Amino acid sequence: MKIETSGIILSVRPLGDSGAVVRALSRDRGVVCGFSYGATGRKTKSRPMPGMFGRISWRARLDTEMGSLSFETESNPAAASNGRTATMVCSALELSDAFLADGEINPAAYDILEKFLNNLSLVTNHLSLYIEWEISFLSCLGFAMDLSKCAMCGTTENLSFISPKTGRAACDKCGGQFSDKLFPFPPSLESMMFFLRRASAEMDIKSLPASRMILN
Image (cartoon, rainbow, N blue to C red; front, side, top):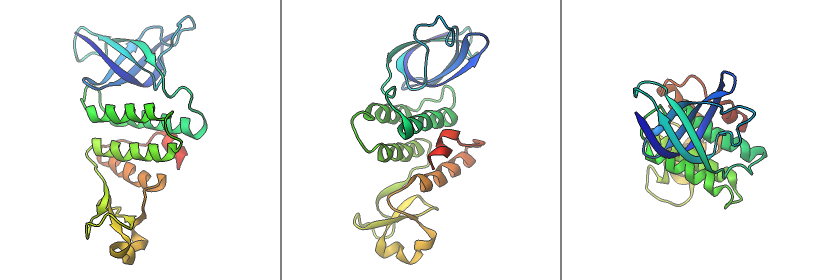
């Protein structure tokens, strides 16, 4: 069996003397996982790294096997990231790696990750860009939030709160009396952590990546 597609590397886990297990997210095949020979070897000219975009070639005798994976790098838009932004990149890649199963096709998950990585060089507010990615990612997993209008009266003005129960927004007039039980609007890293933890519990994900914990 053979797969040829394009994707984004999510993780590279060294195995053996110079090999690694590589997981990459593609739009048409979902997460492709395989053993990459020489991926961590000293003589390897272009080592696969998380965040790289490129061509994926996967081969195996049966589709139930891990198979072998080779990766031809085309670009690495996150390469220039540093400091807190680099931690956001790691978090997005590691959350995708943790929540997305091998072979589970989810085009939206690919699209939002591609958009996030490509837009890093186009915007200055990387925190807002990252939180937008988390909101979209939860939606891809089936845990959609509705922050476009007040859940109680429908207004799009003076949105001040977010319900922990529903993930929906509330305006100051409707939510003010319950302010001690609601998250502030717009969403923060702290409030998004709550929704990520709830999703991880429902999907039986044991723990969130360390990179995401550091961001809080």
